[in-house]
Length: 298
Image (cartoon, rainbow, N blue to C red; front, side, top):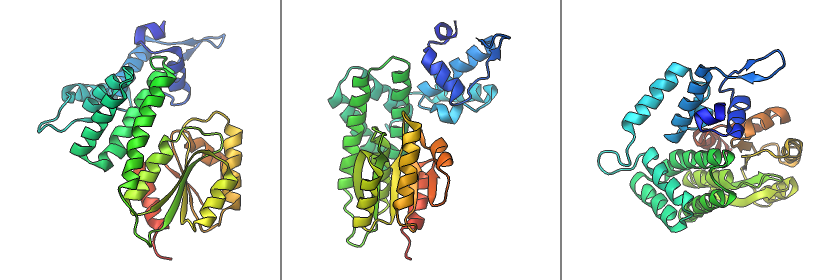
C-alpha cells in the first residue's frame, strides 16, 4: 500500500497526483491505479523536500534525479542555525511546527518575531510564511494537524503581518490599494500577505479581510479612489461561485483599475474568467512589479 510505504495519507497522494501531476500512475484495464517502486520513491523524495521547507508546487515537476540532488543538498545544509546565528528557513520551520503541534501560541509568536529580527520583514513575508503555511496545509490535508492547529498558526502569522502594516504608515499622497478575498473564500492569509507587501512598497492599504462580496469590494475601491485591487484565493470550495464573483467585480470596477489575483487557488480561476485587466500574480515579487506599474504617475 503506497500510503503505508510513504507515510502520506491517501488524500495527500491524490492531491499531489491530480492537482500537481507529481506522478503518472499505471492504469489497469479496469481503470485502477498501480504504483511502481519508482513512484513510491518519488513520493518519498517529494515528502522529504517539503519537510525541508519546499512547497509541492515548486518541486512536483522536477525530475527524479533533480529531486535526489535537491533533497541531498537540503539534508547537507539542514541545521537549526546557519553560521553567524541566523536561522535558516528549515530551522525556523522545525521550531515553529513544534510550537504549532503543541498549540503553544506564545512560543510560536516568539519564534516568528525572532526570525524577523534576524532576517527582516521581506524574508519573513516571502520565504518563511509561504513555506510555513504550505507545510501546515499539507499536514492538515494528511490528517496530521487539526483545524485548531491551522487556525492557531494562521492567527499568529496574521497578527504579525497586521502589525507590520501598521508600523509602516503611508505618506499622505500614497496611492491606495484594496486587499480582500472574494465571497466564498474564507482564508485571509494571502490577502494579509499581499497587504503587507504593498505597505512596504509605500501603498496605503484598505484591508477588507475575507469573504467579501464583489459589490462591497467595488464600493470600497470607488470610495477610496483605489489605484488597484488585490484578491487572494487559497482554497476553492465553490469554483463557479468564485468565478462569478471575480467576473462581476471586474465588470463593475473602473476599467483603469487593475485587478491583481494571487494565491494557491488562483491560476485556474483567472484563466476561466478570461477578459482583460485581470492579472495573475504567482509570487509577491510579481505583485510588487504590478503595483509599481499601477502606482506610477498617470
